[in-house]
Length: 87
Image 1 (tube, rainbow, N blue to C red):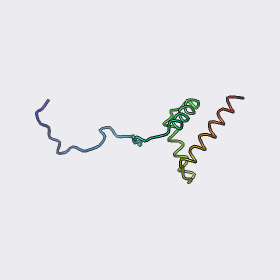
Image 2: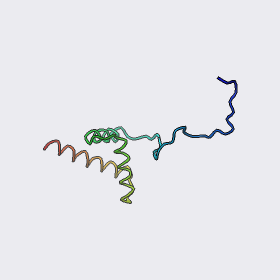
Image 3: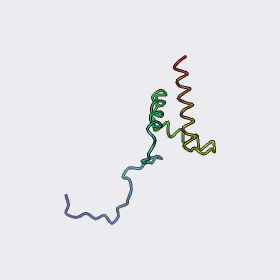
């Protein structure tokens, strides 16, 4: 290992490009994330993919996705899933 390194041409940021995705940290209610995990498992996809799809859908509809709307959607989806399993 060198005693000193020349970092004058160094750049801040990730060493490996993110390829159109950005890592973030957010706080999500436990019941919300659990609902996404359950639904994602049923659909055979990752829960982060499902969260991303849900957010994208809310952007394309032009409707704001606030906490009330998100909770309603999750309740409806969970109820629909429960009805399908009962049949």
